[in-house]
Image (cartoon, rainbow, N blue to C red; front, side):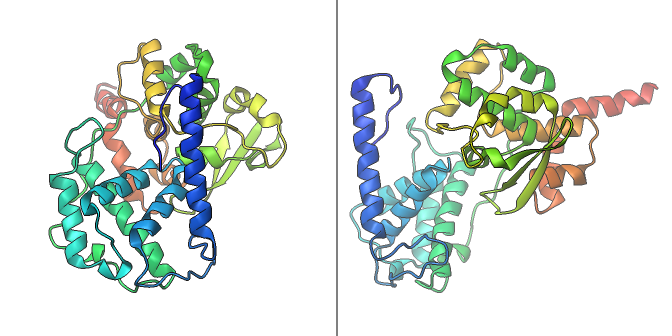
Length: 333
């Protein structure tokens, strides 16, 4: 369908990217005709004899604009796994799911020609499972074979990098003129804990004043579909005030794109002389860890992050060395 390349300032590259995007949109249009398998409340005309690979492809493409690239990666790995085979929904057996699971962990290679990490392989398999679940919800099939495989790998808790409040201020002070929108979106995420997809969908009307210098942000989280209300500081509002001057339904960060964002952030860290591996999602980690370091109640932090369980929030406590140091130092008081 085409591959997107960085550096769209090059006219030739931009032309190639436009052609790739046009092919993707044509595929979406063709696949939707008479079907609309992912529209809310839509009834699918697909059956157990329909092509699962095409369904998977469309589902992954529909998630691309939300910044959920793992669906694209999962689809690409699945396509390499099956090769030239045609996979119907009726072919989705426990054995096939187990084989794909083992392929991800034992054979699949990243774009850097390296074996996938445990958590990346698991994330891609989970996205595969979610695609199957969507087909079950539409009545195409009845069971999810990915749920029944034996020896399924477990998630390994990684070391979570996060930015301190001082480092966030350092980033704000570091000029990055060619990527101002991404800079503002990232800092906004550091102060709200919103994921990239939630920031991308944020509209002007979602941020409002309660009177005086009190502001809030309301959003329905794309990952969990939970409704969330986050208090905003005056400094946060001041930082994006220009973006809030649009119409109510305008995107706050209009034109923001996930493509290459983490590479750009890496360069920004270098400019700011911050020696940490930071991706956009680390802004969410930073929000949680900085709240913990200020002794905020973990139940309140759970609410602000939109976690369904406080156990998920407790994971961040392992990253907050400053908080632990402060607790130990109290022994000298």
